[in-house]
Image (cartoon, rainbow, N blue to C red; front, side, top):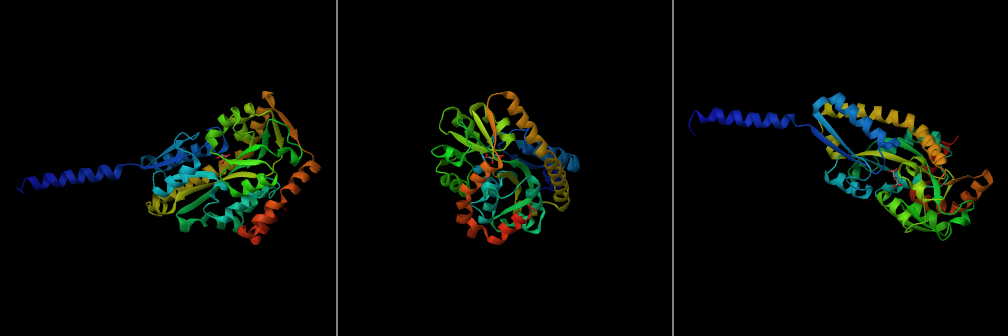
Length: 327
Ligand code: LMR
């Protein structure tokens, strides 16, 4: 190589390196709900704060409404490094750890404050790293809220659910819950539920007020029973190897954005569910049954076999730790 070519080559290599160094780290964050739901809002707060704190060193791309992929696919895509962040329902981790089945035990938590106390307890915090050996690291819990049941007939007694095709999340506990009620549970991605309700492929589903309103399920169901029988919360999750391989200052900036998004989500999720409940009431499109304590006790009793079936797999100590958060 002639002498005058060497500096030119060096300069080209340096330019290429610095261009690469300036490329922002892209964080793809798909989810399946509306931007106006608690999770949709929290994802946007995370994006805003991460980009403010880290300037042009990171770019967060949030894809709401199953636009990029469903939750099932997102678990695989995170492992493969095609996306960098997810916040899927705790119910959907049951293929990775039996311990997360805890959150689907019917009537486990008396309200969202109890859910919050459990998640903040040592036993709750320990679950964040439960799936790390499988490559999934939990950064934080994000609240949504308690679940209600919707159908085209009133669901007042547990026997009313018999024979109904109930859409459920990907969770074996939820499958057992509806089999126990002699209903016909069907695991289905959230993005397909509205259409399936509209064309009668399913008759019923369970979800939070926020999802019932924002995804228009109330337009497709004549009745809602306010049962508060279970919880939908999320685990904000990253690929453990990717996260630990980030430059320390970037990881610290992202941790700060996660803390702020989590605080805002948890301060707003209950208010947001209540507001969405009011919008469902105002729509006049569906009838809401508020069950009496006696009626709720009958549902609780009918679902008791679910606890018996899963107690050993989940671990009695973990169940006790969760129950103690009700006090
Ligand atoms: C569902 O599939 O019903 C929920 O997990 C959706 C969600 O993310 O709130």
